[in-house]
Image (cartoon, rainbow, N blue to C red; front, side, top):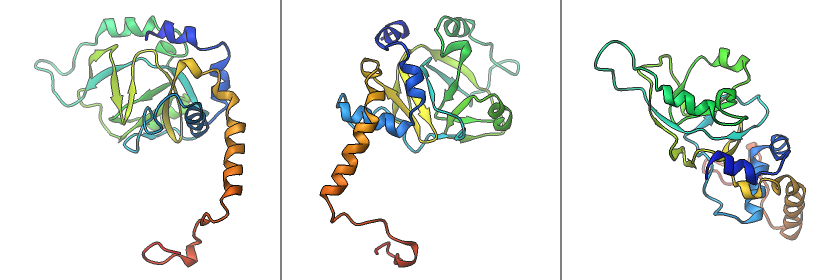
Length: 209
C-alpha cells in the first residue's frame, strides 16, 4: 500500500489522537480489535529507544537500507543517491524532509545534538563513527528488530518501542484505551488467586517468593 493510500484510510485528526497515547496502550488497542496476531508488527529487544523523554512519535514510514562496513573502491566516500532524496521529498508530512524519527537495526551517534532537535531515535546501539554508511536501496519492504515495514506504513513509537498501526483501524484505537483498562480491572477482580509481585526482601536466590 502506498503512502497516499494509507493516508486515505486514516481519519483526519487520528495522528494527533495517537500522539496522546503511549505505545503499550496502542498495542493493547490493536490486540483488542483483533486484526492480527499479538506477537507481530512491533520492534523486539534488539532495537531500543534512545530518546525516551520525547512524546510519542507518529508518522508514515519511508524505508531504505544502508551498508556501513564495505569501503568504496575509490576515494573516501560513496556518492549519495539523488533519487533517494527526491523520493523523500515527495512523501507527505509527517515524514520525508520533515522527518520526526529514525528506526534502524544498527547504530547511531551524536545523541546530545540530535536530542536537542527532539528527533526520535530507535537503534540497536551507539557508535563513534559513521564508517562507510551509504544507501544501498530504498522504497521496499524492510525488517527492523522484528518489525516489518513497507513504505507508507503508519508507525507509533515511544520509550517502549515501535509498533505498526493498521491504517484501517487507526481511528478506532483512541476509543479503546479506557475500555481495555476497564476490562483488565474486571479480570483482576474475577481472579483473586493471582500471585502479586514478590517483594525484594522475600525473594529467594531461585526467584521464588
